[in-house]
Length: 360
Image (cartoon, rainbow, N blue to C red; front, side, top):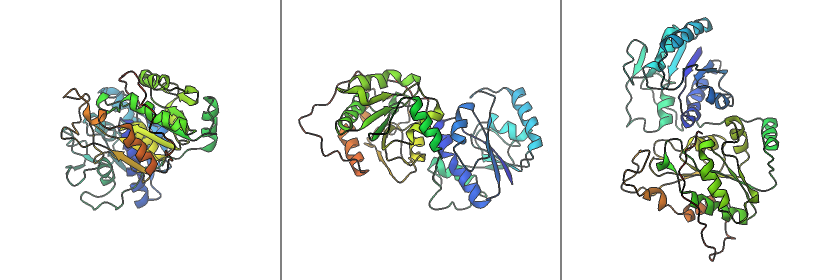
């Protein structure tokens, strides 16, 4: 059996897509799996042992580019794929497998894809509330019961590559590493306040830790504000916009603990099995939770949340503003971080309010 998987277009979704690949391999250990996906996602795919290769999708997200898609499908005919699974629900995502003349083409109904997919399934969201369950279900005949527990994403890293990345950015692992991921590509409604991240960083720095700030170039304002708010910033390293996605994955694998918004980097940290505190506001952990057991999700579950909006429709961001640093510090304690040295007389830090977004 030889599978072509049309992969998703978001970092977190691509990480969670590994659950599908694991489910396929559990059923068909000798199967070949190739993943057609955006170029940025290839470093993620390269760290999934179930996948033979990642194939770069030459068409940007949202572009139709029929001629390019046809040529790509035509070129893939020689590969002899027996099955295609189209993970996105868009019409255009089903075109390449159709033009590649892959015999069995599987996917959810989504946009009008009759004829393009010949194993077209109607999604029952109540039966598959988790994103990963919707992915895993495509590995089985329609209606088949899913494995319990579901597969868990598990990215593999190479020690030599990890050490090389650490040296390249002038980092050391002499102190425990707190990784902070304060961005969120979806929008500011998913971002825990910068001043709260700074407070958590200050407490851990005082306890002898170091802090690594992750994100894209868009997140540099917020990560810079966090670092500038610290009284002793020399053990805080601002990596936002400086690392490639490949290096970010490798460096995150060294983290002793991670605090993150609901973002792609959160799913990467979970797939690296790092102790993780994930903060949810406008989104819900009942749909896209971190899958590793060594994680804690925090949400106030206010009446107005989750709203799934990019910006707070009420303008107050209470779902994030009222979730105080003490909650995150307590969760870190539950994950084994000793925060008992914190003194009650210390005042919280003040940091400028900045909104950013995280490409990871």
